[in-house]
Image (cartoon, rainbow, N blue to C red; front, side, top):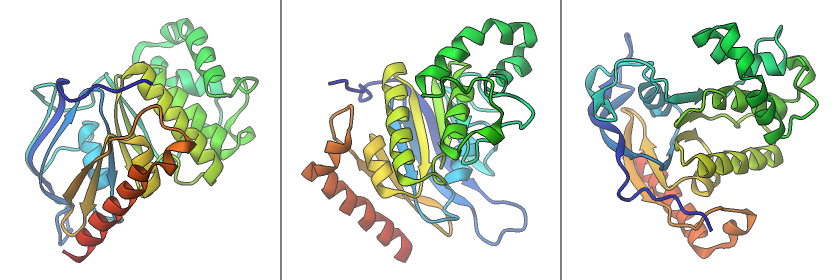
Amino acid sequence: MQERTTTLAPIEYRLEGVSHSFPGAETAAIQNVDLTIRRGSFTALIGPSGCGKSTLLNMFAGLLTPSQGSVRFRGESLTGPAPQVGVMFQKPALLPWRTTLENILLPIEVAEGKAAARQKVDAAMELIETVGLGGFAHAHPWQLSGGMAQRAAICRMLITEPEILLLDEPFGALDELTRERMDAEIQRIALERDATVILVTHSIPESIFLADRVLAMAARPGRVNQIIDVDLPRPRTVDSVADPRYVQYLKDVRTALDRGHHD
């Protein structure tokens, strides 16, 4: 059994008194959030639409500066995207004129040039095989299914060897079986790399299956309503859902979300 040791791990992110309002909005997107994310942890953000999940994720990514409060990354004020961070959004956003391999190598090409990208071809091909896309390295996006495109997007995120994975509802548009397979793949990658992962999701079962901590959020204004620590052994499998603790966590998260809806 492989465990993720996070209790005494260094702090990855610290949010203190973070609030943010978008121009013209009547209500703050998030308000007065205090939060600590430790290195090697897997955190899920769950809540209703408009509760600020994606806003928080964009702050972790260094893409958004809060209106108030501070976001610190490894002890320093976060002022922009960090090279240690990989981001994956709901849509794979593959460039249609590039092959799977070329799309995966794009971050290296943009950051370091074509010569550096060529040196990463073997690593990219290994990732392609790892996620089950063998034989599709030279296919274009229109030749890939939705699940295959998402796997290519995972490879594109991983090619830079990020230490932190920020995932914004990446599998929400996939069928249930493909989504379960992709969840298992993300868990495997996180365990293998001891990566810090922050996942935005609308799925209560997915949040419990993947995360060490589930942050149940409430909207208007967005805030963390309750934190549920998930103490289930890893790696988690389809058998984990039969664990009585898993069932209880389902109830706990659902209760926290319902309470946040009525606060």
